[in-house]
Image (tube, rainbow, N blue to C red):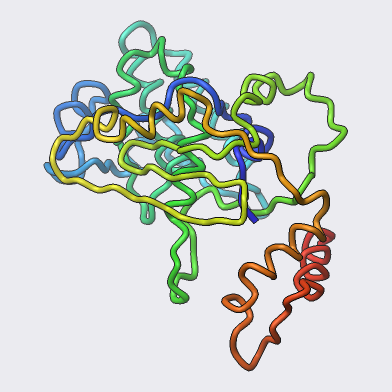
Length: 289
């Protein structure tokens, strides 16, 4: 099932409205990392900095996952330690350390990469600290997640925030949105076919039974606000509203089986399920678990 912008808003609390996370990408971030973070990149033509160096600069180098500690608890503890370190700084030094912390969170949790290094691709958006809160970071997370989902059967892991894949069809009916103002702000973008943006990753979010991903890659300095102007205009116009014909989990799984059954269940180990009975029962079982 397809994670949506509403899932992102409710599960992560990240903003899904506002300015698209896009702009200019560079072949080298060396000057910017040294100027804004006071650190060095791994290689001259790279956007990566070592995670351990970032953590050491924030005084949280010893903040490791503890036995039985979930990601939320770990991030809460890491945030508390970082805030204590930030409280000791003032002025430009405080801005530098705040950028270090934001790059650590964005580079490992929102736009995570495989391996131990942290990407600084979003650093240009952190230069003006007054604008950081205006970007739709939740949209970038979802675009990055879609882009990371390989179609190869050999792909066995996802180095991203894959908790968003654990969603149901209508899990939020009857919930009080008053305690989640970020959900109300993002409601304009819910239930729409729309392009998601994260610099050179431009992904269409389809609320119908369609899945298609467009990854754009270019090695030279590129202004993506110009390169993908059509898709960016679509985001600013709020995309295209979609009304679902499925009123329940069973309706959705039945439609899914009819559309993809021959592809998903082909082979001797699984029977073809054109009526969707098997997939419907499996979906209910997994939702219950």
